[in-house]
Length: 373
Ligand code: SF4
Image 1 (cartoon, rainbow, N blue to C red):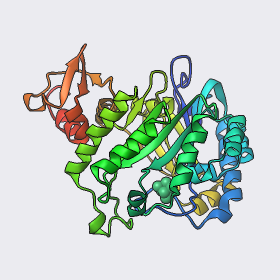
Image 2: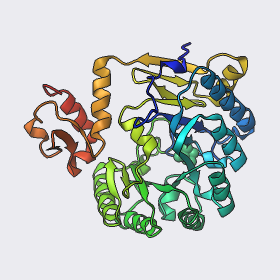
Image 3: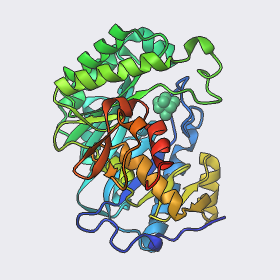
Image 4: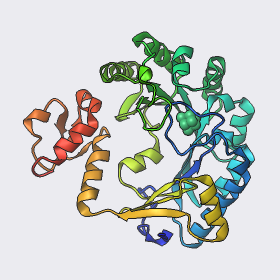
């Protein structure tokens, strides 16, 4: 077992101009979606009180070990919106934060009511990330996701007018049942609510999921590329511009927490399956909520394992993550001619073109193998 004291974080973590993120994992869902391979369970609701107590204990111990004050908090899941405002407020109160911290809560549209939104705001949440995936019922059904279409629309309306500093909508494209028109309809409806941020992810097949074992629902790579181009076009025309391969934002509305991940800033995760990163080491907690709670209650470490990143590993990560962003990476050498279509050089930096964004991982690996990169 590996114990990683919080004081291994760089002394300037979260100091002026630097970010330090806190991630809190909420692994409970009301039902499971057929494509999901996250650390999430729909049959463990009875554990919620003990789980929240364990998170508070883990946070308190980290504070005692010198946890830096955070610039962002992110409640991810699972479905963090199953938590009431008092439960969110108790967790936020346990986290040392800088002024003007960004506090994001991932929410499922079925949990959204004006009263719930007001409560989370009061609890300190500044940003809602609303999971919608699609607004076409046949597409939602083909993803094996329980989502009421009229509640999704009502949730978009309620979040838009709830007065949060920012908010975002999560979409998913490329389900086998989704036509080009279905995707356009989803995008056009979503942008009509004026979200300042949208994330759109291609459906991926994860081993062990219900979708994985049903070939008739497997996505097609060519139509996914088409859907991505349509997303970039519709979102761009509504004033949202890409700043990371899967993320589009209006000016001033980039997700600061996720931007910390993409720029290699340190972060600390709490709860089961949560990952932490000090800049040189990465470590992660037990995946199952029961095992996580047991470890914390026993007074031992919930850390399952960790790794030290060698300089070549860190270089590859910087390249992989940096290239996903619009700022790209410092161009340390010439771009091989065969990658010209995918990578452009601007002011001494290399960034992906639209074609490059469609094959970001392949381009990164080919660039990493080129001399000087
Ligand atoms: S709501 Fe999210 S975390 Fe829960 S099962 Fe669906 S995709 Fe997974």
